[in-house]
Amino acid sequence: MIEKDKNKSDEINYFILIAVLSGLVLILFTSSIFLGTTSISIKKSLSAVSALEGLYLTIILELRLPRAILALFMGAALGISGAALQGLLRNPLAEPGLIGVSGASALGSVIVFYTGLSVSYSFALPVGGMTGAALSILLLYFLAGKDPSILKLILAGVAINTLTGALTVLALNLSPNPYAAYEVFFWLLGSLENTSVNHVFLAAPCICVGLIILATTGRGLDALTLGEDVARSLGVGLRNLQARIILGTALCVGASVSVAGVVGFVGLIVPHLLRPAVGHSPGRLLIVSGLGGATLTLAADISVRFIATGQGLQLGVLTALLGAPFFILLVFKLREDD
Amino acid sequence: MTHLSAKDVNLKRSGRNILKNISLSLGSGELVGLIGPNGAGKTTLLKVLLGLIEPTSGLVQLNNIPISKVSRKSVASHIGYLAQGSPCHWPLTVEKVVELGYLSRGKARNNDIASKLSLLNQAINKLGLSSLRHRLVPTLSGGERTLTMIARCLMGGSPLLLADEPITGLDPGHQVDVMSNFLDHISEINGVVAVLHDLNIAAQYCDRLILMDQGAIVSDGHPKDVLTSKNLIEVYGIVADISLKDGRPLVIGHRGRGGHDF
Image 1 (cartoon, rainbow over the protein chains, first blue to last red):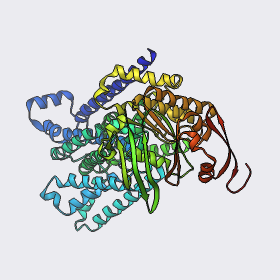
Image 2: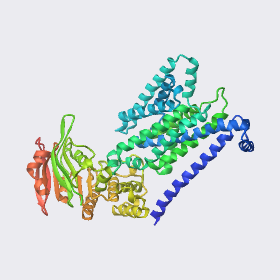
Image 3: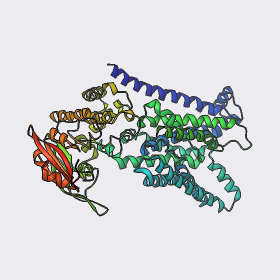
Image 4: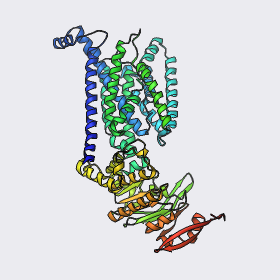
């Protein structure tokens, strides 16, 4: 009977965790609408919304709301993608930014940007980003997938990152318009500033589909803990699982990067912090990491508004500043475990 | 009744013949020992029988249907697999790993939480894992890990179990535990094929041994017909004293092919 209770309490803890994270997301999302360099009190906001007019309403509807929605979706996308990739590659260091998926996605977007496709078809930008992401995951899987060793994964990731980084800079070099190059450079650093309702319409549907696809991979990822052969012997269609994770991650990361640039480390930190809370189950980690990613990105996006720098601190720079020391700690911990 | 058979199975990899003309039939309620030197193709044969590797030629059939035509889910409901070294990549608890076995029962029954829990308790108690229930699998000893994986297979309820080196590296106590559990499994359900290196344990517990060498089956039958001095010197290169105890051979190898005394 004690065992039964224990089993039940695991279940309850999981739902409490989801509820707490959802609550945090809701609070931060609301704060994101009301907090900023132009302070708008809740009373003013409410009266602005109810009057359906005025400067405040414009700020809320056209600047803050899209930004908050994008932070929410992008954070969820990065968190769940990180968790899914870590599960697939059975490696806690797999992260879209670190292993080159975000870089490849950025390259895809930059190519679309320069060929002018993005002017004629607005959807070309996220499609370019997603194609880049999907190709990089395929390449990564080809290079390191069969053998989930950390060394191979990092080597393959470094190779993809370096190559896509170099090609992106090459594209910037060849740019005829230096001002455009400057713009692209800052976009690449990752920021939700200057995002508009159009960006929401471009990215949100793709991310939604990606989130749903990734959320269904839980059982397969759990089984994959026991190795590819055992997972297949348990009835998991491995190719199908791989395809779903590659497609889902490409949709999530590609769409995020194409509207907001490269925001790194969210997909690394969030699953790592939450993993013990779900008993290390890669399946349960998915949804929890999505919520955690949204929490972290919303919080970071609110913080950059108040950290005074001339140009406004880039979101991607802040997450990298927080993430890099964390990454080093993680590597040290892995070294101790060996 | 699950019946698994292979007919004239060949497997070639980069010009090497890894499996040669393998024909066998499994699944009539017996504990089968698959023996042979390192590199004889035992692990590969298990994977081919599970449909994880496609043979170059020949046919593997599950209940008279080619296994490549059977869905993974359906194969899972018939055959359980215990991989060599019992890999576990994340620090899951014993309970969680055993629970994963339930996947092979398919989706339809997965919603019945009460029956799942009673199966889980059964599998854990049957292998004496109650005290380890909440321990993390990577922190267990080799024997405890193997027992956890066997419990996982029992949880799955597949009638046929293919086990790759289940007792290698275990102390004698755990070896006997694991082998007795296989015997229980047989009396309860159907059949077990275990890759074994200890010839005496194989002779003592199995009613049928399959001896492989260089990708081919050398001998298939009762231990006393398989463990002959001719087979042992040809396959393992050992000159052996073979005595019969309760009708089963007891093997003491005392000289290698090179003529060195042990």
